[in-house]
Image (cartoon, rainbow, N blue to C red; front, top):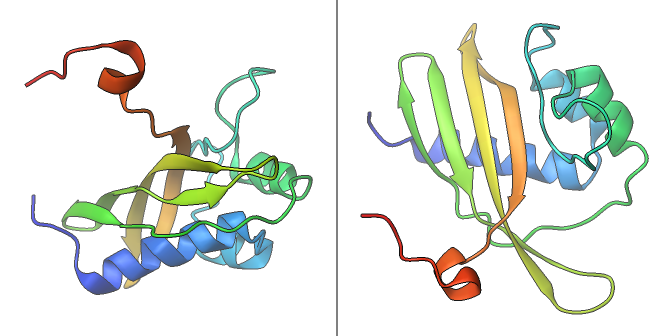
Length: 136
């Protein structure tokens, strides 16, 4: 698959900003609202791991605004479907930084990219943290 264009990477980076800055209208405008689509964002382990767009936005209403830095969007696309990984970091309220990995999938609808899925994970260097040997 070819890499995403700079314009596509800006879309992914902007969407991540919408999430962490709790710009709920922008999230709704740049997402596909389809009950068969699952949005996974922040999950506490309670209830099912996947949330509808409505549930994800409702959850974000309860979370304090944050800020991510150095998104470093990297993506690939085929036709009207694109997939990104972003590697931002954020300051933790208790001090220090947390490094994250965000996965995002979008579909082009009428010439506009719309997110269909996103997921946030802690970006752990497994080899350093757990002594694992990287797979090649």
